[in-house]
Length: 132
Image (tube, rainbow, N blue to C red):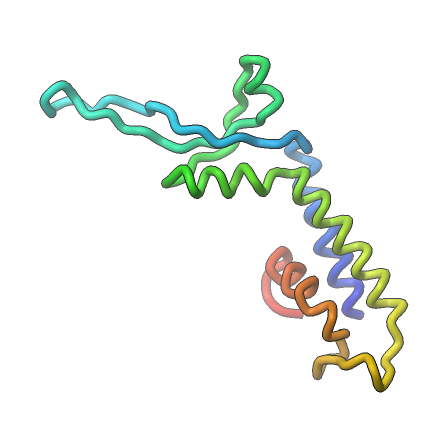
């Protein structure tokens, strides 16, 4: 049943987000190292993501690095709190899919999924890998 796929994706998100914690993250650029051998040395910066609450208190748990501030900002945006909200949405969508009975006015894709839930199934497939 397609609602089961949505619920499985929600379960995976909750499990992974719960293992990290729900506090928002922040991105910042920082000096990573000085590369010797050039006139005055060469500074290398990296973009990193940290747990936001702890950063405010001076304790900075490292989360991830990215090749750019744009990448780090995206990673920070998709913190575990976003994952938990997405899991809630997937569960609500699963309940709606189960309640929805096929009718003439409710168009469906070839595999029986309601057309209005296509985005939710695409998200579930991305989380779980592959297509259902």
